[in-house]
Every structure is written in C-alpha cells, then in structure tokens.
Image 1 (cartoon, rainbow, N blue to C red):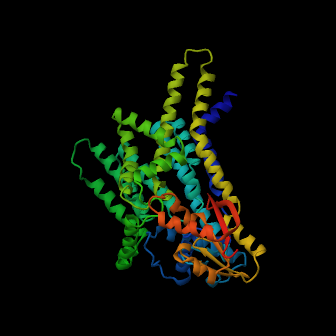
Image 2: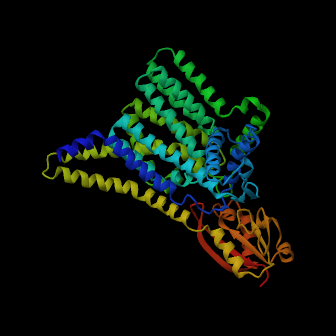
Image 3: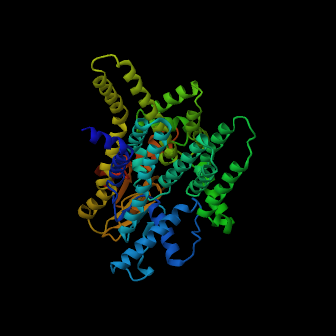
Length: 525
C-alpha cells in the first residue's frame, strides 16, 4: 500500500493531467458530428472554404481579414495532412477532389459536400479546448498548488460557454489557448524575469492577436508582470522591447498579408471595428454590456464568477501582486468590450479561464480553512472532505448540468432538420414555402422554397400571393421579444402574422447546442 501511495505521489501531476484530458475530451468531442451534412452555423462553411482555397489555388492570401489569418493557416496545415491521408487510402487523386462546402445561402446556412472536412476542423478546435484545460491546471498549480490547479481545471472543463464553442470551427477557442499560453509565460516573467519568458510571452501574444483581434489585451499581463518585477526601476529595458518585437513577429507570422495586402487588411479590420461598435443583435443591443455579460456569466457559469470575485476582493485587500496579475487581463478586457454594441458568448470566452482559476483558488482556501477548523476533532479528515465535497458540488453542479444539456442537444437533430423532414413527408409536393434566414435547408426539394431576411419585411398580402407556408425559427425573430419596449412595431408585425396565418405544426428542440423552437404556418386556412 505504501508503495502504491509513493507511486501515486510521484506521478500525481501526470495522473491529474490524464484525468483532466479524458474529461475535457469527452465533453468537447461529444456530438462533434452535429447536424452534418447540414451546416447551420453561419460561419463554418466559410472558415473551411478559406484554407481549402489556399491549398487548391496556391494563393496564400486568404483575401478575408474580418479575422486575422493564423487560424486559417493552422487549418490549412491540417487539411494538407487530411489530403495526404485520403490519397493514401485511394479516395483522392488530386487537390481537385477536395470539394468546397456548398454555401446554400452565403454566410447563413450551407451543406458539407465532404463531412469529414468538418469533423477534422471541429476536432482541431476541440483539441485546442482540451489543451487550454491542461494549461489552466498547469498555471494554477504553479501559482497556488496542486489542489487549486485541479479544482480550477475541473471548473473550466465543465464551462458551458467553452464546451459549446469548442464544437464550432471558429478561431475563438484557439485564441483562448494562445492567450493562456502567453499568460503562462507572463506569470513566469513575474516569478523569474528571464529573457526567454519575455520572448515567449510576447511571441505567443502576437499569435493570439493573429488568431483574433480582440486578444490584444493579453499584452496587459506582460506589462503588469514587467512593472511588478522592476519594482520602481525604469520601465523600458531590453527585455520588454524584445517582447514587443516578438509580439509583432508573432502577429505578422500569422497574418503576413496585413503587410502584404494592407488595403484589404484595413478594410476587413474596419468592418469588424464598425460591426462591434455600431451593429447589435435585436433584443440585446440596448443593454449595458457589463450588466449583460455579468448576467450571462451567472446564468451560464453558475457560482464560478461569484467565487472568482470573492477571491479577487480578498487578494486585492491583501495587496497580492499575483492576484493583480491574474485580474489584469479579464479586468481590462471587460472594460474594453463594455464599449461594444455586439454581445455574445464567444466574446466573453477569453476571461472564463481566469475566472475558473480564481474560483478554484477560493475553493482551495475554503478547504484549507475547513481543515484548520476541524483539525482538533476526532473525525477531522471525514468532516473536511465531506464539507469540501459539498462546497465543490455546489460550485460545479450548475455549469456541469448546463454543459451536459448542451452536449445532449448536439447529439439530437436540430429543430430545423426536424422541420425539414416533417415538411418533406407531410406537405404536398410543389408547395410554396417561405422561411426567414437560418430556416430549414429545403434545397433539392420537391417544394419551392425561398428565403427572406425577416418575414416582416413583406406585407401579409405578399404572402397570400407568393406562399402556401411560412416557417418561423426562434433564433431569427426571438430577439425582438427580449426587449419589447424597444421593438413594439416588430413584435406587433410578427403577432399580426401569427394571428392571420394558421399554425400547422410547432417544434421544440435545439439549435447549435441552445434550446430553440420553430413554427410552421399555413398562409390560407
């Protein structure tokens, strides 16, 4: 028994990593083939098309700069291996065989002509998510000990926001991985101040920004670590200048055409800046961003943000430089996004690892306090572990249940697929069907289907002349109902349609991991 205990202690970190990797992989690969061959995520078809075009054309300029390009080059490398594997199995003979996804309605819905392309892309993103979980463990363990690291990584493993976004081919999860990698070396700068740590923190920060522009606040922890390390001495020195240089190198290595095709780069960047500054989503654009994100985090992540705030307050009162360092990125990031009109879960994704680390540290301190208080009782060990288990279960139960619900929805048919199958089976062939954007994919159908941006863009008389059925999906019109005082006219127009048309069928289900419902109306009774 003693020998087993010694082996366990010797390999404890490895066993922790193995367990966390298995758990994180299960949660992020569960349902990874969702909806295929249908593509209901508005960006997945585009994000797979870009690297495939690079391979097929030999033109390394993606000619798309709404996002920087490191993620697309990473996918290109993955698709080179994919192509060679398919060739080795006799399934492809040339790059002409790499068929691009069908963008049925560009930037809205599409269809995968080769679903395995999307399984690979989603697998790359899921792998980035798993590696981020392990990084959270490594950073928190280095800073606060093994138990704090394990608790933080468990909380992050079950983060509903991170679990959901780890299923999509998009740059957000990979950006978070690089943000945490850069922070890990910024933390090392604070601890040791070696030139190697400065260089790696700067270079990885550049790659993170080259994955998604909004990663740029990750430079703040490096500056904070440098300032705390200098302790009043001159800020500017060789190390920080080299870190800045390596940050630029990392960015331009991942997005070289920011320099080589400057006009296209500036136009793409300007579009995103304008989009986030002025264009919101119905139902949430009028809300204060900080209040919206705070409410979202509590609804979704449960006690994690509250525990993180408690640890932050404790650390700041104790004038802990380490807590200040861990707070530097999420605090600055939240202030910056508070000026944005666009609000969504992927925007707040970058601060969640920091919240789980602070929450894990708070739980670790609570357990240590319980150990001290029960040390003199006969059942000290039992009481400590019982109280610790209860505290952790309270913290983990809500996000874990939400994460499991999200994954269950990923394994079920999307509500729009349910509508498509029902209409193909039950509606008379040749019927004229109109659907809003993000509606079912009734392509190559026995029906005549057409999209409209929003159903209320056309008067009821237009539908009486041009449609037999109208499909309404909640993720298109539902935003108006979130803010009735702001959208009374839009809601009134939808209600008039719901009253005028005849409800034929209603569907309850999921869409991209979220709950969603859809309605099918007959235009004439």
